[in-house]
Length: 72
Image (cartoon, rainbow, N blue to C red; front, side):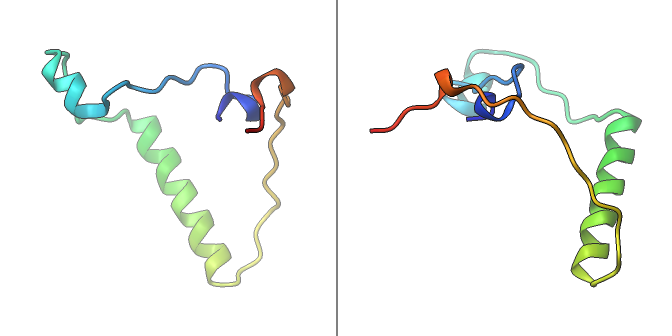
């Protein structure tokens, strides 16, 4: 699904976190300062929109990949 919207470096864990732990892989609950700063900026933007405050339009560009899209 993410790749359809242009995100090419996305993976899904088969079995999720329980399988990751069962396989003995490392877990880390730390985050980089950059991630925290970006998270705070995103939270502030959501709060401003929710409160009806004017914000700058945020846009992003994706590349639609029809070969990754199908119907049942």
